Length: 143
Image (cartoon, rainbow, N blue to C red; front, side, top):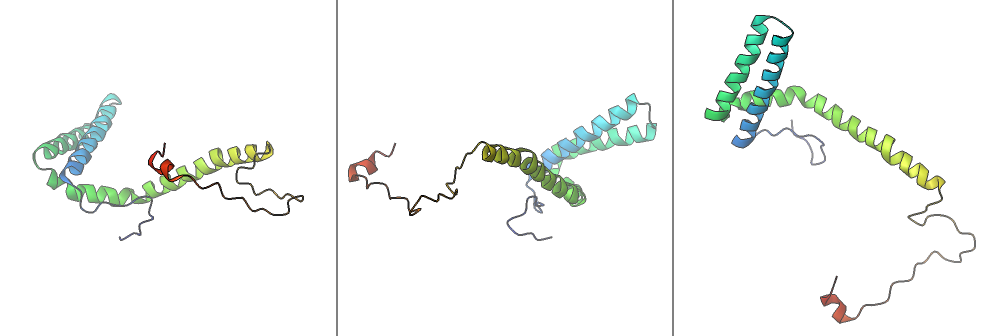
């Protein structure tokens, strides 16, 4: 699955050992939380034991042999790629339509023209004069 450089989400096909360790620890935390939640809700003992066993195995592999977690990492990333893509696009849309658009409409209603694109019927030209040339000494003191 090759993507162009403009992708919001990309799958890392060759994760480093530190990334695999982080993934294994995160998976262990997730399985532990799910296992304890099942234990609290008095769910199936088999389900609870499986979740806590996966958590223990994930911690063990993270510590001893993180490269064993690579296939699990890749399957996880492939399975959740569509969800990650959807959430990224939705988040961008929400920010655009619920934050940027209302601010732009509000500024336009208040009369702000940051870009200077408003039509001026009295103007003979829209040419902006070039600022004066700086002295050569000013280039050594830029701030």
